[in-house]
Length: 261
Image (cartoon, rainbow, N blue to C red; front, side, top):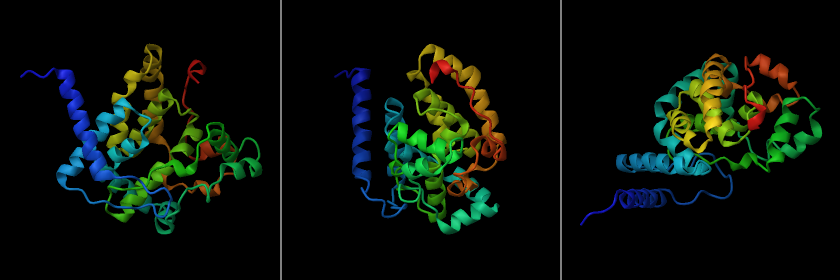
């Protein structure tokens, strides 16, 4: 009997979602460790990668899906990022110490009280508190076996909000897509390219035009020319003037139109 294409698509998505639920389970509620490796067969890894990609495009707010996509497709890029961190003094320190960004180590409320206006810490605190974000919101690592590579992925994930502040992009769909293009240029992680390429349909026509003509060219240029942002010990820089820090890191602010803030 004939099965309409829309029904086939829904069936495929239900099948993939079932694989994800079976392979995945729930994340631990407490941040006991950053690395909870769960082995996957080749079929399981492919299923998680394809399923998370399909579902994340439909619902970019699902951070767990975006995280799974990054972990199952990023091995080669993570290796390059690891070597880049190992080549720098600060990167090597971070790899050795396994510095974790959490509400215990980086408290936005405490930074709000302690950091003068105009500093990186004050701007980060405002960014987080205004939106009721928490440093604990980032997913742990499930599908990267090597501990060093898992930490690189974790560090990338946990400094994401720092990068929002440094390049002055809001966490809107437009802001996130612009930052994904920046991250693609800077990290080479396939998940950033996939997210940037296939989620723009959620934007209005003027936003798509602004992304294509202004934000993406800036992102590709800025992300390829700045300092290695994964090897920065942000935790020691909260009292530094924000504009001065941008200069030190060779960063330029995103040319986001005020119309879309």
